[in-house]
Length: 338
Image (cartoon, rainbow, N blue to C red; front, top):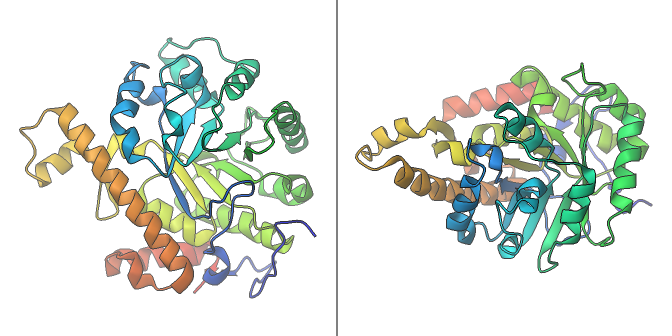
């Protein structure tokens, strides 16, 4: 039996209905001692037009990310973030650098980057913490994506690293992933420790994204697979809660550096400064203090979701009643049975 096989109850395959008892579970990331749900603050040089800025931000905030974080191999290779510093987190997700190649190319400050440089960066990792390695993703057929990912992971000497497979649309002309192709090739997905999807590639509406997360979790359950689902580029609290209810497990993104979280909402920092009477502070001071507050909010949300996974008590989510009703309406429409 596959190590991630689980006994499944309540699942109504074909009717696209899962019970919240099935979607909101704690799932273990193989090769680590870490359980989900997991909320991962990310760092990337694509955050601003000055790639070196992310290094200064990381240096100032690294003591607050002792549990988990995500960094880009691109930023490590070019020393925007020092590779010796990242072991401050108990678990580190190492992204492939493809996000930076797209974002920085627009500002014409992109340096050379390819899979070989990514592999060189991985070999420099200091094994003083646990790592999740993301494949060097590409838009092509599902079979080609999986074969390419397997070839990539086979070149990594340290097999103790967990493997996250980031699934992409099937062609450069496509912007949305293929649920049918996932279902058709599901046996090929089972060797990966985490299945990843970019938030913007799951669907072109909030409802469709929720529906597709439900479908992916349903396909996994139907095949007895409890692999955690990682949504890349999703780190605002309300969206995390919705996706978690639909069956996703791991969430990362840069929103915690761009916005300020307030009652589960992501506000522009200027708005938050006005609400909190901080409008005399410099933008830099507010940015750092807001980021620390955001980290505390994300840590609290992570604990809240873990508690919810045990109790399924919606009051523990601490969401205003009118907002909670919208959350349940959205996720219920997407296919969750309450």
